[in-house]
Length: 347
Image 1: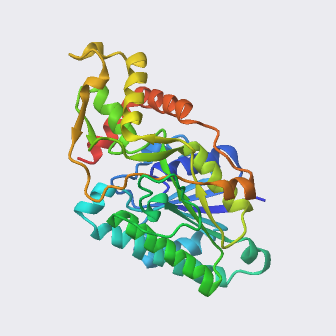
Image 2: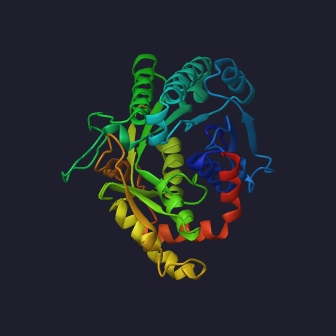
């Protein structure tokens, strides 16, 4: 059955991937709500912008009146809530925006969704879903252990960013428990892939390298992350929205635990083959790696156990890091103009 799907933050990295996936592979309609802050970019959606199943509204989720109008205008069956401030360094230097968007914005959406859902009838009410997309960073730091984050892991956020996302998770869970709003919560590991904002680690390394700039590495670079290809992530999100039972939470990961320094060295090695640094006064891109002071409060290790999602819904990632990173690097090399536009628009 065709659904009307509302996506907040649909011009961001993961949001735009979700929009493209739904429009290009299903018959569902998509309403994209995005305030087009630094990480929101409509150039990521040129492939679908003229599709009759796609709509865009420039709206701040902190504006409750406009959110109310959107619900009444589009009458969504499913909500994917991705709109968020998401960069840890920015949250350390300016946490206020993270509190406003990630906490107050989520509250506004939950309240408007609750009001809208409570007036639905029969099957419409039963099938309505609010999917709140979060991060593994809410669980804190696994340190030097061999443990994995599960859906039962206690919350222990370390940064203003992860604390604000933890708060929004708690709100979503409370709105389900108290008001029976049909909420689903997902917590994902580090995403990578095409159209990611260039300040994030992987695109930053790619672009700095080919431009002959220093490649910064926090501390010794031994921080470990689990890497999830964005195309796999959005497939999981749609599967959860359409098949999962209300009130569940799911971890989504890639089973690709790597040290940051190993990620950087891998990118440099692939770039040496795809775009040899003949245009630069270096022999290989690894020469640009520069260690800098570690981020304050930097977590050492994140690792996701997505066994529940695998068992309940049969999802698992299609890409391993080796295949996904090659696709990602090639995409950036083929889309340098997109990168220039994004960087220029945010200077």
